[in-house]
Image (cartoon, rainbow, N blue to C red; front, side, top):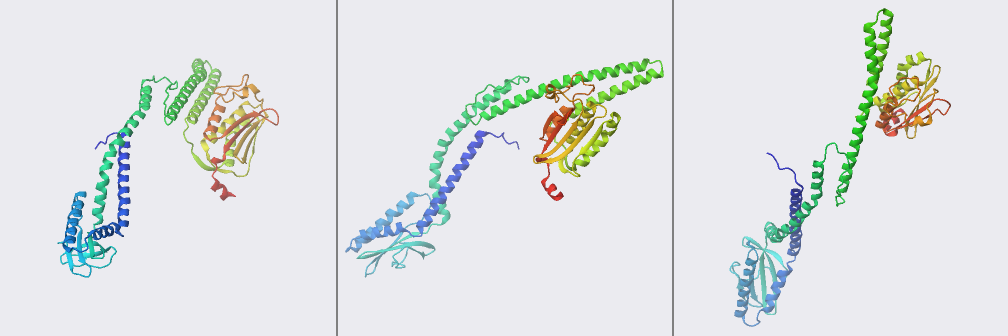
Length: 464
């Protein structure tokens, strides 16, 4: 079965119906409780008996009986005409003070007062139960009997009395409310129409003023989304253009060296061309790997968080780069605690430390020293990589995290993606990256703070 599409107007109508139903039930409950409280005393029944007995003539018993009969007929007609359900009839008994019984309603049977208590009470009469009120005057004693009405019938009576005004009020409330909702949705319809007419390539903000304060955040959020999308598309276009430009050089070298290898006349030329070809392929492979890493980090995909010993992981990365460091005569040292276990995004941490070490080894001269530090601070974990290489001028420091940027005159032929990858990895870990000159002398000092939110406090407590 296909249900109709959800509608705000239909939801408002159903909510209003539920509200009216709740009001109806609440009013029935309030009136019922008031009735039950009044029924315990039957003050109106006692007052009725008092009024009738006071109106009876003192000396003429025939006239007194006629008054009682007329009163009985009148009140029972009023009871029947006031409701559509049968609530029973009032019954009367009249006795003369210090004399014989004078009158009893036909349904009562034999005359005579049943229960002489003057206050209202319940008595059984035949198959029914009645409220009894007895009042006396100087000449007469009168008993008025009112049937005890069942609770279910009381609820039906109260519900019927309340239902009619509620049914009249419902459309009077619904129509203005429906008009208000329909008119209130007109700005949203204009917004939808404006979006449908826009060109897919148009990322300019929506120039639409929704007068309702509740709808203003919607337009602001949509305009912010447009701006974010525009920046993302421009960034991807620039990335593709830069990547194509950067890949053109190694691919051209690969093509040239492959051609030289094919036409080489002797083994010496073939070996030289093969070595150059291998270097060009390695450079292209490294560039592609860097591009894929950067794209994965910018995609915002969650990393593989796990509890690891950062000191052990860092040592493993240092061992992996030790052949390159030894070949250049660079000493790499680690300053850290003996153990540092944390819950961390390990792929992002690998990208940070790996690229920082690659940069330090690539740009540091022979005989230099690279110091890697791990420490725990109040705001989290701090990773530092400090070298005593040639360093970077102050104007170029601000551009080190730009894609494909390489310091002019640099002896290394890197891809210019190492620090941008580090920046994206730090961003994914909600950390902070600072690149500054080496405070101890020549070179660079790169510091990465990983926030304490990445640490598992329960695990730290077990270690301590």
